[in-house]
Image (cartoon, rainbow, N blue to C red; front, side, top):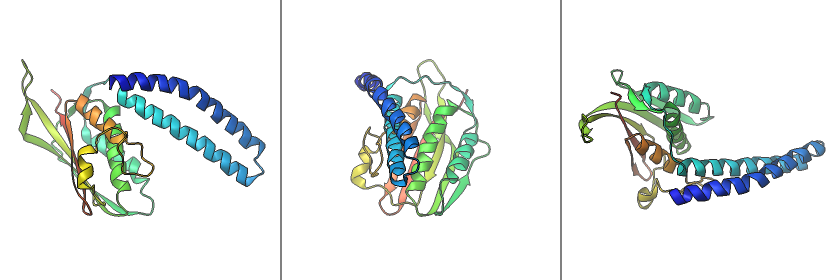
Length: 228
C-alpha cells in the first residue's frame, strides 16, 4: 500500500494536468459545435470519460494514502437513514423495497461520520445494482458475545450492521477476492470500492465480512466499536 501510495501520487500529478487540458479543450470545442448534435454528443462523451478517469485516480489515492479519521461518538442509524434516503433516489423503476430492522437501544459508535457514510453508500449502491426486484434488508444489533481487549484497556463492545440483498449473489470462487484492489465483477467497475470500504472499517477497529450464495443474494456484515 505504501508503494501504491507513492505510485498513485505521482500518477495523479502527471495524469491530471493533461486531463485538465483535454477537458478544457473539449468544453471549448462543444461551444463551437453547439449546432451539430453528433459533434455535441461526442464532446459530451469526451468530458464524461475524462471525469471518470479523474474519479478513478481519486479512488486510487483514497485507497493508498494514510487515513486521517475524525473520530467522535456517532449515531449509526442517522448515517444509515441518510444513505438509504440518498440511494433510494437512484432505484428508478426497479421494484426494490427497503426493510429497516434497527435496534432503537443501540449506543453510539466511535467513528468518522464522513468515512462511514462513504462505506455504507458504497454497500447500499452495490446492493441496489445487484437487484432488479426484491428487498434490501438493513438491520442493526449490539454484539453481546464478541469483545476485543487491548493491553491496558477495558474490552471493546461492538455493534453489527447487516445489509442483506436478494440479488444474483457472488460466485463462490470470487468471494476470497471480493475486497482485493482492482478485483471487480462489473463491466464498468474499478475494483476499488469494496477495497476502500475494507480499509476504512479496519481503520475504525471493526470488521467487514460477506456471505453469499449465487442466485440467492449477498449479506455484508459490518462491525464497529461502541463509543466509550
